[in-house]
Amino acid sequence: MTISRRKLIEPQITPFYHVINRCVRRAYLCGDDPYNGKNYHHRRGWIVNKIKQLATVFCIDVCAYAVMSNHYHLVLKIDTEQQKKLTQEAVISRWLQLFNGHPIAVDFLKDGQVESDKQQALSNLVAEWQQRLGSISWFMRCLNEEIARKANKEDQCKGAFWEGRFKSQALLDEQALLSCMMYVDLNPIRAGVTSSLEQSNFTSIQQRIREYQQPKTSAKQSPSNKGHFQLLPFVGAEHQAKRSGINFAFADYLELIDWTGRCIRNDKKGFISSSQPKILQQLGITSDAWLEHSEQFMERYANVSGKWSRMCAFKQHAGGHWCKGKSASHQLHPN
Image 1 (cartoon, one colour):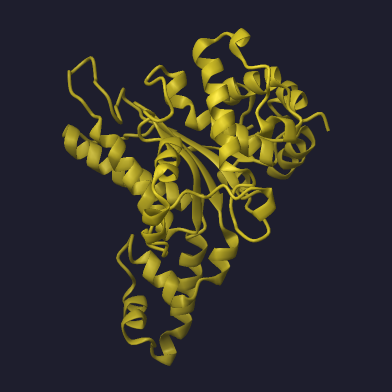
Image 2 (image 1 turned 30 degrees about the vertical axis):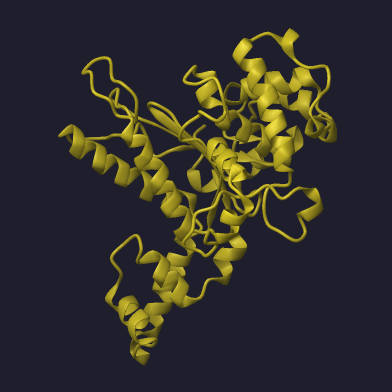
């Protein structure tokens, strides 16, 4: 049974979602098209730049991304706290970065006030835009529409560029988030596009590695205001209460993704080191179970991923009758 997108994205249940979108009509985001000989590598830059712009406007953080030849992946977090705290001025200012504003809103931003008979109309507008600024559907709409327009103009054609709006997976716990991010970051390596994380162009893992390698002095000089794009940081369990971010240490994530990537690339478990990465020991996940889970993330899970009990509860809330992924869920999450 098809479940409405409104029920598949529930920030009250989980703020984390894996989003996938694929081109239609044999369209290319990047790379060499063997049929017409054209190279579309530059389109990957379009989509990454648009993601970065939207992340500074919407109350949505980007945990991971990977732009492939005919599809892309995003792992997003809805920041409901930031969304609730936005002032009227902030809501209008953000929205006007994407769309032409309503005259009432433009006047308010210019003069700081509106006539009394227009205040209710302004409040309604701000409430609607504030809700949209925390919506993954609107985030994806802004992303896909611009890329489709630019690609159609370049191809001198009309019609659908994407096969659909987007597909989403709810990530219900930390293990699901970690394995999904790993799946996304390793996409170019699994596809044979590259053999190293550092050379995985247009991915979040390459961006994180480059930022980590920057001297601390230049990192301090980088702008940290709302107009500067930053991936949702790894903060580690010891800093989780002080900072908002992913509840893992970045060094542990790097160790784990390097280990997992080497295993997948060689397709031989015999090359796995006998010493497990620290983060696997913390989560209580065995090496073989983790490797199988991360390699087959999309095949094992449909619209939701996490512990079996939480998957069933989410499906019941969304109106589904069964969950995909029981065997993998029990391997990683025995409870």
